[in-house]
Length: 345
View 1 (tube, rainbow, N blue to C red):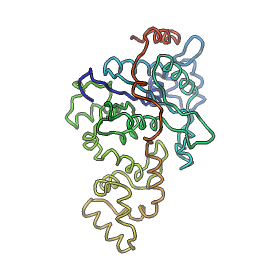
View 2: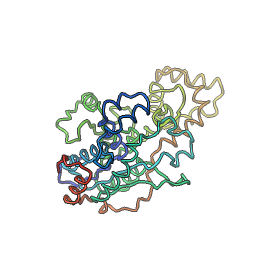
View 3: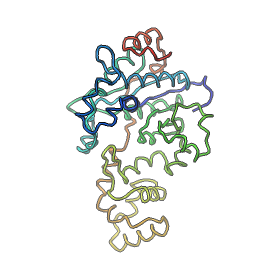
View 4: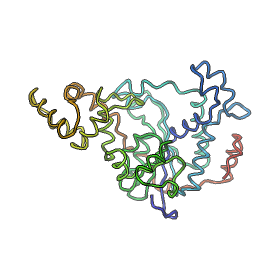
């Protein structure tokens, strides 16, 4: 992002990511170390909550961090994107998408509505899908973030704040990803960057097109192809079983896309495939992945569909709709209402 703090900037927050991170960061030790959901439930009363029993630990952390970014990084425009359900259009592509994830804990689930209500009350634009039996028009937070960034990046510099590496595919000429990670300092060192000299949120590394190439050895669009081959266990995207970084990254560096890899081996007989595998071993230093590539082709292309963030949702907003115009009196009323008086404005 431009270092000139007077310049306009659009900050798009992955709200689900920040809310869940804030929730888990502020859990009582008894819950953090509990082994079963039943054990956790015994200590739910120790989670930060109002005198009326409304859980607030995740929303408290979210508001603290968001307000800090507004003050320190000085965006002029802001949007928060939220997930509403796991039953999205991707479930129509692959029914087991995100199938390995545990149910969302009740104290966290209840805070989604509270966060949305508070943000909308203070004038922050929230993008979220309405759950529906017809999953085809139900999107995830990253789909709204992707659509916003593509719509406005030619008009204003965009920063996407998240801890989800899927967002790296959205890095572009005027769009950066502010990756919230405990490894931010270590990553910066490998790039010879002093984070203390950068105007970034805590524990955040800023990915540009060049830095993504330097750190991940991939171009932004190749993040999708990488997941198509290597899969993603957190979202239960299968990829090609048995093929990891040591295979996927060299192949993508040579071929650029998943389609180009398959185009080069299409129509080859067994002898041709063996010769191609030998070429890859000599040139790229990878073991023969040919059997897996051939057998798992359908999975690879399905995985690419799953990993691709939508960028064409008609969000029905103008840049003016996203201008930050938070009324501090209303904000203080909201914070006081939910007993978050210690948050400074």
